[in-house]
Image (cartoon, helix red, strand yellow):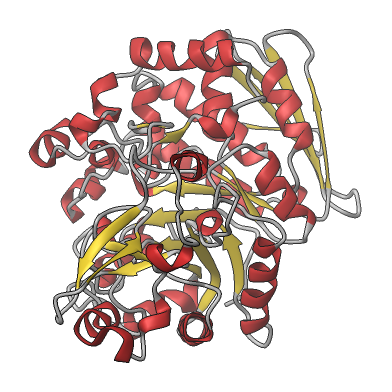
Length: 480
């Protein structure tokens, strides 16, 4: 199924029920009109990071089901799968073969050697300081091979996630074959995870390296040219980087909206949100929540440093069970620029504020994505957090089928379902149409969406202080 302009759910295969069949049943029973697409988070055999350390892409992990279960979902919803373009599991047959045979392995050039990357006498401390890092040390790991030799290999993320060398033919063939495989199983979109880290080059910070990043994008797109699948590069950084990608004609993520919207609802001020929405391209996916934390760096220069600091302080003050330590090394937080919480709890478990946040999201440019915990207006899961000591698990609750049945009965969830059904069925939200954003007062924002031929117009005004809203479609009031 091709991409549709309908709300997309983000979920693990085992987050609502225990497998893909349960997920399919939940979707049909409760959300068939509210959700048009599903981003199924990594469903492949993996050695950690909740699937983001894949061992292969040609199989579905048997505990979730198989490709036929995925393809059945694809008959009803457009689907997105993940491809980790920067790394592959150390436990994969590819790396295991390399570790056993070293230079005789056919996968030798699949992985990026730290030792061979640098000229003699380097890296210097200056080189290492220049690298855009996710941890407080140089991004390599010493690997001991079967013959007893030791070589440093690039290792940007977790200890199991070994970096690929995207410059080599072996890696290019690996990427091409696996992307085409995913497309054959019904992918409408393939998310390129950690995309900006994939290109490395001497005397750069090894992040979003130009022009090599554009060569990689063009190459990857060419692999899928004769399929219905599109690529969605995932970049958590300053908004100017994804905006560059948008100018090349690709869909992007709006990862800034979560913090900008929190600031607006905490402060009651509408200007920053309005200014941001005026800048955004229509060809984007909006988020308030994902499987990771709330991105802070994404909002830089959209909010001032003082406003980001204010939002962070308020988040810890107003948010329900949101503590600084949950986003620290104590809870294995990989990224110092993310805050771990559910969006509902970030708003103090307040139904009205939460509904207004989602209302503003669906009127924003682009296609709304909603994480499964957000779809059920989920609170922070402190039990899972403390059990695992993994900060991001605060927002990764496992819902049983009975829990889902109970949660969907809550008024806030019922209102959210109706809101998403409205978004999916209303022609005014045309991606080829127009958007106008105004601020009638310092604490109000009005967003007008009009379809390409002008026949449908939806207008929403939200008061960020009184927490009220008014929606009209072609002059008729709409309520949820």
